[in-house]
Amino acid sequence: MVIITILSPVFLPKSVKDWAQKVEYNPVRFFCNDDRIAVYIHSFRMIKSHPFIGVGANAFMNSYKGYKTYPEYKGIVTLDGMKAHNNYLHMAAEVGLFGFGIFAWFLLAVFKQLKRILAASQDNLVTYCTVSLIACLIAFLINGLTESSLFYSRVAPLFWFLIGYSLSFKNLYPVSQKSVYEIPR
Image 1 (cartoon, helix red, strand yellow):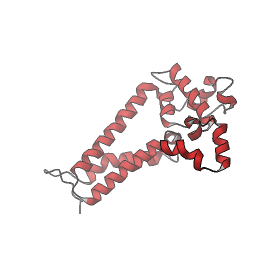
Image 2 (cartoon, rainbow, N blue to C red):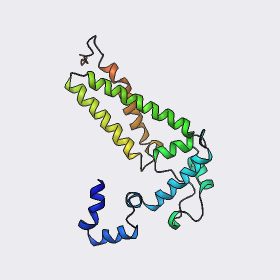
Image 3 (tube, rainbow, N blue to C red):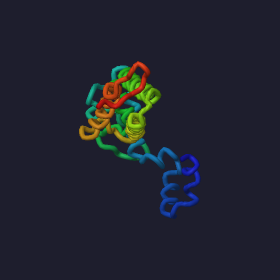
Image 4 (tube, one colour):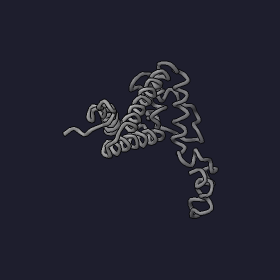
């Protein structure tokens, strides 16, 4: 990906080359627009102001205006009630670094359980389902780098469904004494 990004000006159309020069071919500006970078900067200010307990649950959008700087990044003007467009910054700003650490620990525990299920599985269906769950969760978490998807009421339930299914997966396919998962009949 890095090599493609570096070499892309050579192979891209002129209009894209002009745009890349306009953003000074900065990889961060290339992948995120200036609006999001401005929001990220304000999110970091929010976290810096309230590192331990955050600004409060569901308070990011209401608090955002108080952490804006003027002029904003590259002269961009963001709305007064923005989401962070980054799950991790949004969460850290709302519940603080301690709350974010608990969320990270929880995710680590879910992935460890899925890894154990995958290692013990001798059934193709269980292996495919486990790998699919891991891939879905990773895709959702990567998407969270540029979107506040955990804070949209239509999208967040999908993530929590995947987490719930991951946590209950060992109950759906009980472990025998030999750690072999069997599909219940």
